[in-house]
Length: 183
Length: 171
Image: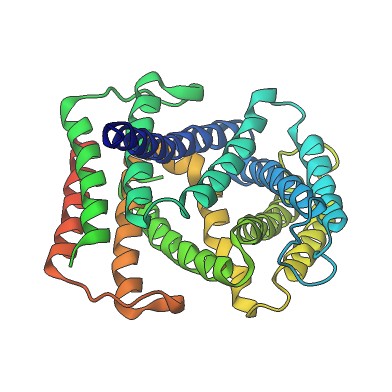
């Protein structure tokens, strides 16, 4: 009587992990689209600068808060202290705010999305195999990018989803799994 | 940019992404995943700061708002980012600082590459380059990873990615 619910829970857990992997890939497509959109307005170097500043500010906050809660950062002095990490994060945030003026506020999300992706990867890799992670994230990335192309997200040129393009995206995913698992 | 050049650059960037992943993995094993997630983008930022300094000197200003439009502010940013990178990798082999360099250059080229290729082809091409790099790195056991020889089935997997890439492009 208890076997079926346990199998159901495992199934739900696997489904959640697969969804998380696919979501991290899909989010990567969104973040890269945003960087490209800012790049078309400002230039590639300027867009990357802003993206990385937001990403580093957010990662520093996560690491700094973890340090204040007792998990010391694995850096040498002086970055082994939580407050030092938070000061570094504050500098990145200040530079991001100074660099962001003149573009739409939501483009700041590209760095926050990348932070979420880094955290998802860290969380997933201790729960699933590397192969499952690569397979699900590639699936999310290629199909997410097909969808972004279809709608011409953030002012990019539109590319229609066709059956051969979807098949190509699927082959890319299957190929990644074979490269990772092949004997 | 010419289509073939854009596609070639994207595949090479995918190759370098494998280098980044391998090095980030090595940093994670020594320092932790979160720490690696700071060192890698910090390396990218340090490279981008240098490129912005180059633009500021070459063109007189960057396209960032004040104060980062001027050469002196970007020069200060170069100094601060490289200092932060040095502090972050202290105690590790110095070349670990290079983990984010290729990603920084790749991101800076992204608007031009996606403009030429579209997003789906861009990701398919980086995936192809990444798989090609993974085969090479696994074969040599680079950066402490388990050694896995190149095999017919794994090359077949790479061919599948290549066919997928062609279909995404051709359709």
